[in-house]
Amino acid sequence: MRNENDKTLKGTFVALVAILSAIVAFVTLAIKKGRLKELLISTPILFLGYWLDFSLENIYSQHLNVIGILIMYALPLGIYAIYWYFLFQQEKITSIRANRNWANRDWWWALDGWEFEEEVAEVFRLNGFKAKVTKKTGDGGIDIVMHKDGLKYIVQCKHYRKEVSVEAVRELNGLKNDFQADILYFIASSGLTKAGYEFISNKPYYFVFTLEDIIAMGLRPSEKEDEDVIDVSCEEITEVKQFPSLRKLL
Image 1 (tube, rainbow, N blue to C red):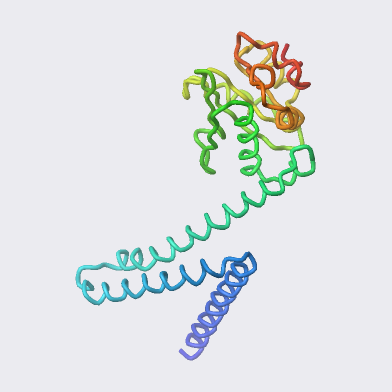
Image 2: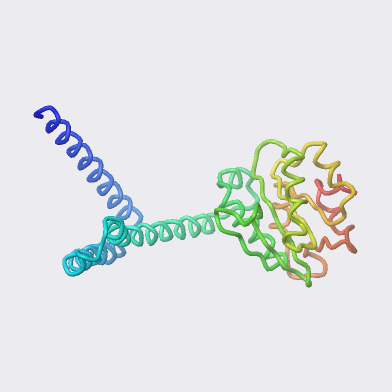
């Protein structure tokens, strides 16, 4: 019995140390990022939420089961975590935009997959498209949905240092009808394999952009839309010849 009690105490001590360490690390990070004001506001609200939970539990204890109590106590912490997640995520995006250097390939390679999608969408916006990045969990395999001149574009991004295989290229093609898309854009930073380019060679609605193409689009002046905005509709396919990787399609 004593050994069991010792193990319980030891486990409790370890858990408390882990929790305290996490709290200290979080507070330190928040202060380091200049979020002391948000910390001083959100943390008392969190404790207020737990005080309300405790009060409600005492009042309605006869009507609550174990699962209900767990949900009730987990809710304030969940909201608190979501708030700080989006706060840090927005700060990350803001920092990326503040240090944006589209001409620098190393800057692009430093981006993670979701950041890359955000920047690609911004490049297309500057070229006349209405672009919306889907949620991180994805939208049926689509990363960006765009509209321009009455056409719907669906975009998939693969920010890899190696060529993308034909299987991924086929997957996007299979989603065309599901999304009722007119044009497919596949953003492959390092291009496709030979089989990938062969697969889309007879599909006038399917286009591939490498990192060089995205950089070129981002650096182009956009004062005159007729001259500077990419329009890769099926009727004006010759416009894309200025992008090196797309020449493989023609």
